[in-house]
Image (tube, rainbow, N blue to C red; front, top):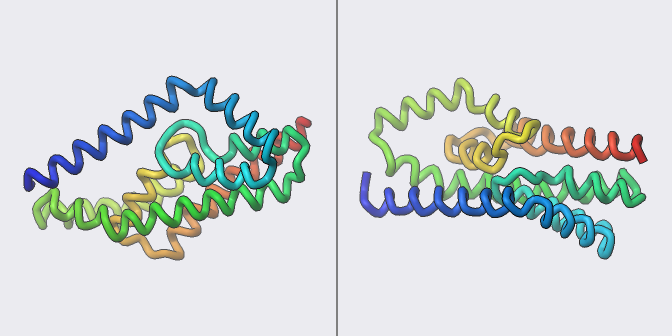
Length: 180
């Protein structure tokens, strides 16, 4: 592996870990901020916050702003639409970032044989990883980058990523609307 590629991966991992730690350690502040932001700006804030929460791996997903918005009495259908649209934009951006940029970096990072083995492994289990990332608190953005890097078909990405994520957001919004 080239020195430049090693530096890239170490830097990238440090940035992701740092951002995840910052969000994790400041979770109460961020939840309070989301609460105030939605209370002040309504549906546009749901869109923006959903897009931001799906922009990097961290424990707060787009269902949090959607849940707060429904709890504040905003129309659950509109909240769902704005939240899903924000998540879709971020997911699509990261999918193509993985496809265009990270696929080259992964190929530079390993031998041809290792790359073929990784590709076969991802063909076998990768789609399941994308689905699990979309439905659970597992790092979603990393699964999207990987799906893009290993050239998952676009329609499969939309079914297993954003559509599954939309189901999760809808489930949380429905649950909150039934409580409030």
